[in-house]
Length: 339
Image (cartoon, rainbow, N blue to C red; front, side, top):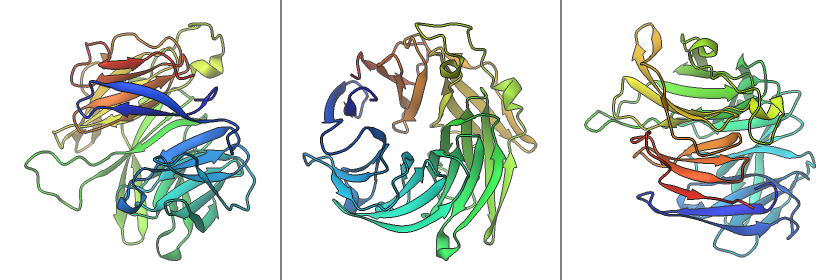
């Protein structure tokens, strides 16, 4: 929370309870926090990474009182951070200089294991690969999308696509396995990106040997998945603030269907369904609209589980817990202030 510090939300597994508490306040041993990411490994359970605007990086055991600052020689602002999906003690860090870093993390320690220059401007989003521990996609504030590979000491980066404005959301498909379906290694790998150009793009990745091939969805995102933004809303007249699209994947038991949830600068949340065909993707019907709740831009959407629950956080200092299985219903739980 930009005005307060780091807020922890506690959510029941069934989605019926939501509680928020400020656990780290700005000025308590670190400068204004810019980005936070949880790690997922057994050895890093309850461990989060906190990146700050002064370039400092902190490892935080959330069961302890304070984060531990780790030694970093780069003082440029940390603008993106992400835990590796497949390696629980790895974290990826993006800086304002365009540098991409890989860190090996312990309970209260961190060691820089690799770094590579990705862009000539700040990295704003990172999404860790769901298949390879040391691969990720990084997005820069000018809209560029870069595939980064640190496997086997390759240290390669490839710009494969771009938005015409800053990227605001980036997520790999979590590769949910439909009930009863075989666990095939050659399943499609999908990536979504959203940007201030008011466009959501979907990419299909495949790998042949050490090289990647990337195929952009044959949907025309600017036409099919474009949302019309109002000229004014709430108390904010800024066109920059209005042009913000948040997006994430939603679990689906049909292996031939993809679902995503998006939210725009007016706080409007939509559920999209797409059918996978031989010639690409096709949007099925019209998107379903969730009831109005947020009054200002939703800057983050996060899917929480395979039951279709997702969290939305907004610049109106509210957050809400929703069910994609019941889009016509109001939020399951909500928190009215984030500081």
